[in-house]
Image (cartoon, rainbow, N blue to C red):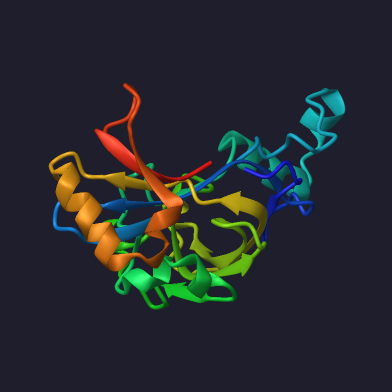
Length: 230
């Protein structure tokens, strides 16, 4: 992740300065049916990390609406938006050329446009923990080329419904602008044979020459992954 002070801004949040993003991963995966999916994982710092928030007697006695709202958010610690953490679907890459970095510049991907089925949130691309396990949809994700192979600025906005606390309307908007995000690589389903995988990417990816197939480390579920050459 870039060393820039990347943040997420959430409307209706009592923390108007936004929340610092401490982890952001852009990756992809090839499943056992040779279907390709794009994944994002975003995690923020604690909600009150950048606030001058003190748990002293004055704060305890402060029963203002703003303070009560801050206390509510602090109880939920931080925000996570992810297609991998809760095993959500991620973004289906229908055209493999969409993973060609030459085609990504200024490309906007629309995902889970409203309305969505709140009874089947596992079918959504991403899960979210904002104020509990809420619902996130109506994504607009835009890639902006940085002139370095596999590195992009990423703009991401969408809507959140606080379903954990019983709401059904998507009343929260979020906005993220991440700087200099390097593509983390493609995770390969362990049931696929390496030779088949190599042939698959050679025939479908213009930029395969920029990648290398490497053995995964012992802590990963995959046997091997495809990553950008250093």
